[in-house]
Amino acid sequence: MSKKYFVLMEGGKDTAQVFVSKQPRGAALKAATRGHTDIQLRERGTNKVHMFTGSTAMVPKPANGPAWLPDKIKKANVKKTGIKHL
Image 1 (cartoon, helix red, strand yellow):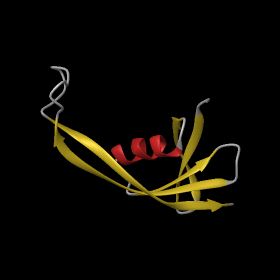
Image 2 (cartoon, rainbow, N blue to C red):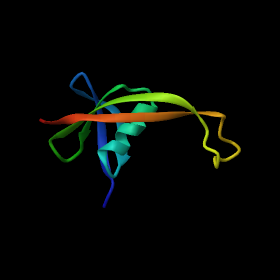
Image 3 (cartoon, rainbow, N blue to C red):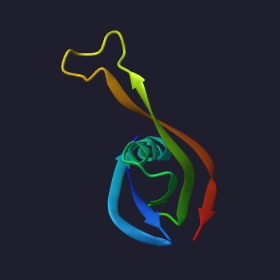
Image 4 (cartoon, rainbow, N blue to C red):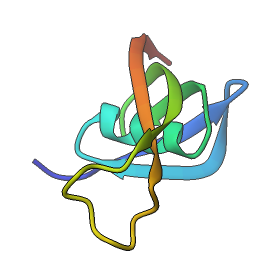
């Protein structure tokens, strides 16, 4: 399976932010980590727009985390709300 490119959309228009992932959920998690809550990702080369709601929470680092990782890390959470066809 190859990489796919997802362009973040705001207000129905493309932004300059592009997230690369094999699946739309991976790209949505990256967008949520950067603070976006209403996520619309247009898949390049298709007419699909994947829609998600996202949030982040500060959680303690995992027990097997590396020493350089801070004690609290941002954990993203997304929920797919649907697909829109352009």
